[in-house]
Image 1: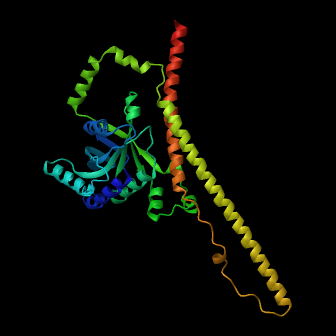
Image 2: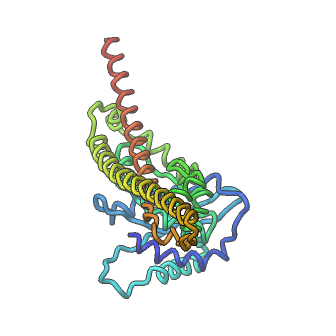
Image 3: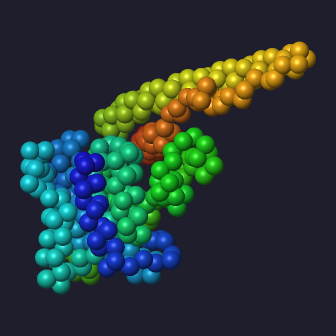
Length: 341
């Protein structure tokens, strides 16, 4: 999926000149209800289990509000489809939409997620490409698993200005990240979403709600726990293991660096003592040597992957907290009803 986004990101540079940019960042996203239904339908038709579906968001920018009015999916294709051109496909789709007078400006992309597993290097690189070309670009994350639990899970994210600067520099060393004060909580910023529907659709929704059966409404009070919590905890443990391996690598790097610093200090002291002895004997000092060539510093491990793992762990913890808080609320309510009876 990363290669798909890298190839499609090239088309954003072409459209950047038509979209324009604003000095103020995007503070709110207004999305049409039809776009939400298209995203859900795309996953139901092509998404299978952990299979990720992606697509393009179209719309326009009004002051500090990003209005998403349309979208279209990326078609599923295999590596054997060498003749398929992602960029050409996007340009043809937007050209067709423009001919029928539909908003065709590129404002971001969407992606489904499996139990909230979306914080990855592929998403970071893709969003950087979009946001670097079109300042107002966002990525919509749709979670079908949480949506199946009874509430729509659709969130919008952007890269923070600090992370954008780091990605432009392409310097992910520990020193650079420390200097920029980048932590996992400073990587992505969530933008609030408002779903807009026409008055006719709102009237239809009110009519459908009145016709819904009472039994369906009581399903939200079911006290049994689904496998959502169990799966989230399993994924959380896997990422914690990955974090432990990265910590071991960084500790090994720190020990090697400290050991090398001691060796350099000892070598410098021996040189000074030897030069002092040669000077007392009236001999010339030893020739100067480049210590950096003799003691090459160990290569520091990349810290960006560690930050992404920490961000994903935080996301899993938030999901578990949200799920358990709902279940605890139901249990306390059931206990109060039982005591009342």
